Length: 136
Image 1 (cartoon, rainbow, N blue to C red):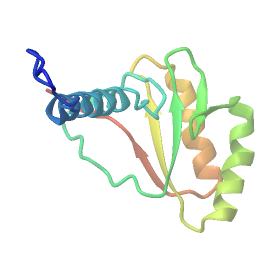
Image 2: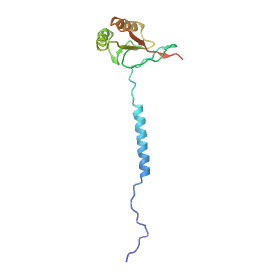
Image 3: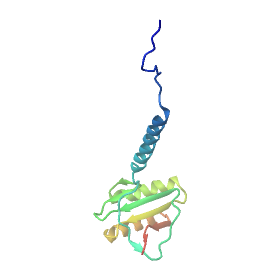
Image 4: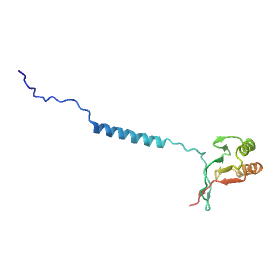
């Protein structure tokens, strides 16, 4: 004779709804963390403001940055100012008509910017723009 147990016999079940909630939470957390990990790919300079500032197309460009401490960066790589003419000649031979953007901190020494412009002119590079921010 079988005597029934007062406890009903239940099979173990995997609840899928809480599992989906956990998966979506992990996915959202991963996306938020990965978005916050994007590094700024430029050199940190405080651009001067200009009322006539206009956005430029930055495709296929070369950037020369001058910081307020007088450090110079050629495509985000620090280099001394005396090596700039050789790099510009290399750029001119690689691209027939290169575009160069100058990012200068508003507190940078103006003489360094003039030297960069002079070296660009000596290398016969005519497409030169100075990055600014829009004056508010």
